[in-house]
Length: 185
Ligand code: IMP
Ligand code: MG
Image (tube, rainbow, N blue to C red):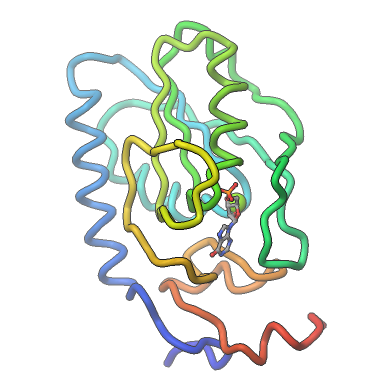
């Protein structure tokens, strides 16, 4: 049974899970034998679900850290100037860092976080996103690894929310238009 607020499912739980194995494999091959440990920085809140599934298939030893970036609020339009809230617990200087986010949309969030982390002089800095919406990009940012490329549609599930809801869905889908005209209660 799919959630009644959804218009359609774009990616099933099975499709997501099998792609995550492939992405994890690519990441494992990249770091294999060359680095002893990485610091994986996940972007809260949206990347929680993807990160939890991904790291259980990574063979490179890792330390987990989190960054929270200011969000959409209750709209589907991104802020053009995302703000980083809080600080990292790790010292990333000379460490191999992998940034993980749920979606590369305008690219503003990743670009901002990337440049802030890069300024701390990590030994290497890579990025991995669950979804990529290339049509929406406002800069040249490209992720080193991406799960799926999707068209310009607002999606929810698998960690992605609309007004804070639907993150728990194990699949990815679009909402019925009527959901956007209701107030959240
Ligand atoms: P940016 O536009 O690349 O900066 O993306 C910023 C953030 O917007 C992402 O990390 C997501 O949290 C959120 N976002 C972008 N597109 C969607 C979507 O289709 N559904 C839910 N959240 C989204
Ligand atoms: Mg997010």
